[in-house]
Amino acid sequence: MSESNPPASSLTVADLQQRIQEMFGHKDQQRGVDGTFMWFMEEVGELSAALRTRDREELLGEFADVLAWLVTLANLTDINLEEAVYHKYCVGCPRCRKPVCECQMSAKP
Image 1 (cartoon, rainbow, N blue to C red):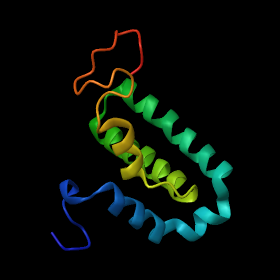
Image 2 (tube, one colour):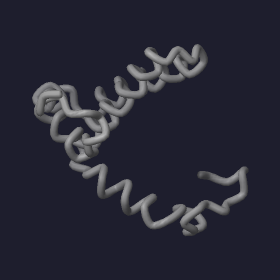
Image 3 (cartoon, rainbow, N blue to C red):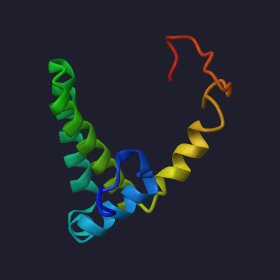
């Protein structure tokens, strides 16, 4: 694979945020947070439909779309997603603080 198309396993969240910013940042700024959030929600709806059909190709595309729009929202609000995820989930369950969640099934997460 070429350097511009690395395997997915080598793509960090920070890499993805930077790529999305470089590709779409100028359009994202014009659309703003509210418009971008509407697109994000539309993609979540499409993911919901794909989950019902269980079509792998459709799921691959919709998961990628949801992630891309989430990254766009993070970029627009100046949030480093790697930092956010690390602080919320990499120190243990956000609720019970255990390395393996011991929360009741009815409780989030």
